[in-house]
Length: 180
Image (cartoon, rainbow, N blue to C red; front, top):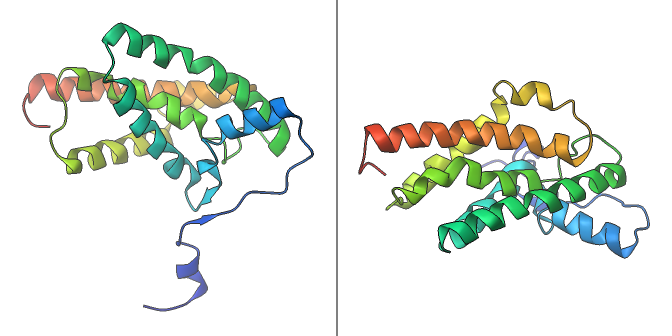
């Protein structure tokens, strides 16, 4: 294996940017918005930030369904709030370190797992890859909704892309039961 600069760029590393002076509210928003800092892991911050979303889904989905749905819905509000503040703090629209949208959108992709729980780690890895691919593609209308500003614009495209994954997963479970 070579020690060329190209290989070094693929090694995960934590890189927080220089940030402006922040008050307590802004610090909380930054911690939430960056998924406890996972959004500062490079390369591929959104993928690193999606990993806590899978653990979040697994933990919360073990609760009774009404409680889990209430938690998943309630998490949408702090993600919009923190995303809006993080955009201002980081000085750009939908900044890469903001990964709370990936985290809270995971349940929209994985909700059919209440019908059939994966038995193998490989299934989770495949679901993760499909989830990330859908987020990258931004199928209609997710791609057109990215123009919405603030935390809502950061979140809505991920929720819609995840919804498509959820519908595909539901169809898979329906037509090929017992295959997860």
